[in-house]
Image (tube, rainbow, N blue to C red):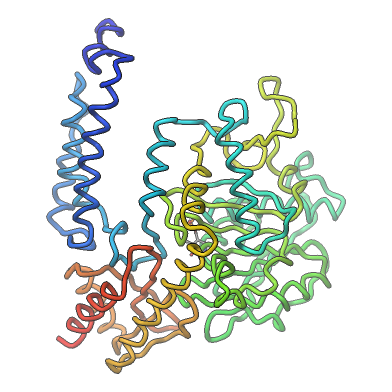
Length: 468
Ligand SMILES: *Cc1c(COP(=O)(O)O)cnc(C)c1O
């Protein structure tokens, strides 16, 4: 083994030498700049050749380390072609946002800080900005002023976090302390979901040990909205899941009647608002989330519609004590509880990155008006897609109320073919789904970077393929 001090000296040109980071970061910035500079004109997906060339990144671990710049060059040469162009203006797959320049830049600054957002004393700025951002989000998203939250990887973990709080709270009401008595032998909990519930919610249910036998599915209407009049009245501990923004249609469950029914059963209502909750920021779309504040918990993403880097989601719970009950840990090596925010006491993770920083920067950059403009503009662009498809005589399968469009090209086989050929052609990237038994292309407009021209370019490409 080499002498470790000499090893790092050889590798880095000297620890503490200012140019150590500088040279490498400048090189990284150059590569990033080039990548982003070409993002609007490159293939929106990944070519077969790029997949093949990924093998250049494998092979045995070298016995002696390599030069950092050449490592970055390898990533640039063979890694970047195997990325989808979700940072570009014509990536409409999944519900995947891009990243605002300010969000990326703040992310870089925060990366250079490499803060561990576990405790206030370990990173005062990370903890402090969580409080600032949560206050802004409560206002922007029309959530109760007393709600508390946690910064998590995404809505999936947001659901797990909120559902843990929900589980413990409904059991506590039934005279059972889940933290000490556990789940085995606990009073049964019924979970009520709409039949179009997002798959990640069902995973959260399984992860927490509920079992699918305890889930009651409520029929949904033609847009995927849970029918509140069909919610079964059940006795005992009940948790109801509703969603803001169906991942296919963009439709919203009717929160007012759902929360009314829930109240009669003393049930906990959790809302999956991964992207749809952001509709609350727009005066034109706010009616879609009417009643959202009456729920008990919410989970939503920043990495989708707010266009900040992955991974970034938030769980919010109306009653802070319910979240603390589920997530607090104590040990001699952690500080005594004080008025300061201790991030790890609110969420499932201990050591983690400081996710609030780029959300803070992005919200400041946009302001109130900018956030609602982002939501409204992407919704308008989705409508432009729908109009273009309809004008070409195609079947748009959903009411385009948000940023989601489902289009069929005739038979399922034909639709599958058009989606595959669109992905291969590369002007834009759209995924496939099945809606009410029909195969559809799913177009989601989630990026700040998309313009009218991008929609027109994408429409031209898709319609040429569909007509060919
Ligand atoms: C994306 C999505 C999720 C999961 O969110 P992640 O950020 O992937 O964890 C849950 N629900 C809906 C409606 C979604 O669109």
